[in-house]
Length: 571
Image 1: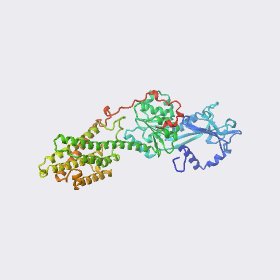
Image 2: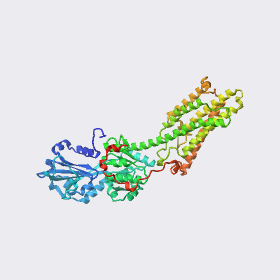
Image 3: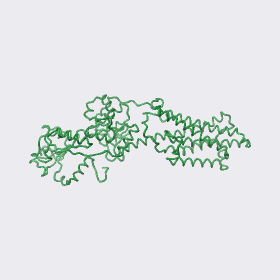
Image 4: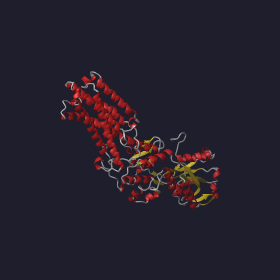
């Protein structure tokens, strides 16, 4: 299902819909020509057959049943001995089949991206099958008389790609994600659809078929999967070999599928994706992810959101780590420069740690996708969360915050304008200034960290995420309350109201922290534009190293894959 009012395979539904449009009463046909036996469809042999009691219009000889076969036209032609004259029923209206004619017509229709089915029929003796028989493929392709079917005609179905799918593939290409299509369709159909999707181009110019893959060694297959994006007339065995060949070349693969036969390939892929609407339970059990809307564009959206999560984790680290580091280092450095007391108190450290994590850290945790996030290549396999440049930014942020906190404390402690204060009053003023430098400096870190690639010296620093402005307002109001409310500032936090000179130091510290971090970001953008490795793609120390690729011997389907225990398919 999955479509309102329609339940079943899209190909079958299109045939039924065409029948209704032609004025055929399907229910009447079912009553007049009941099914006696059938050969169920399988992607292995790519056809299905049903045996019926003949209707009067079939002109069937006495004692005969009529068999209807539909499937891959190139395979159907090979089983045909006759062709119907003008599609008219009856043994007197047949002539020897012209295989070249049908092959040509199949190629013409397929080249327009149409899914083509061969429609065949034949008469068989009534005593050759029993009612309810579940026949095997040999009923069609293993008969002792060899070719025996009559080709009635071809059915061409247009199943165009969804517009959003074409756009999604374009976006995937921009993000460095290669998209390949594995299908059971004719080679020409698959190639035409590939052109529509944008996966067939000068680099990947043609399709390769399942029989061609079967004839290849594993080593040859490993090379072919890097030069072809379209695989036609593919079998379940072909699918798992393609997946494992890509993995053997160091590629991270995601496989989509909906059928029972897709389960082994879904299981073998790094990320198996099953269809939620029209997928089978077996495919869902074998997958790590299920598409609720059966839309390829959702996969690309998931890739985008995965990058957002990765970036936001790094941004949270960039905000919280320097703030937490500077809280402890400010105390240590303050003692090393011979301040009369610590520049910030324990309660101030606890407060800053809490309020910055809840507000400023939260902002970066819910950042939307950054502009340009889908035009960068995928990160290296095994890349660690903290790379060289993130580590450098954390160090820079820590040094800037620590230096500004201690520097402001030293200035307040030594400046002559505060000579009117006694020792305790000067200490309270020093701590008030250092405390505000720490928390307002943290705002500068947050504003810079909001964008990993783009400059924050732009109005967008205050746009796109309402939590950014909200957190700044909350922290500012709380800082003013803690700084100026009598009793709360002196008794609890050990400080006093800050004067204008102290606020100049606070604002100056904010500008210094923000400017230096943006300068570092600009330098990194310049290095990246010149081709430097700013994403640690070739730096082993900051990656866990790629996992060992499976060798060619592991590319075949596991024995008995069609009887896999479903309980073992889920992780």
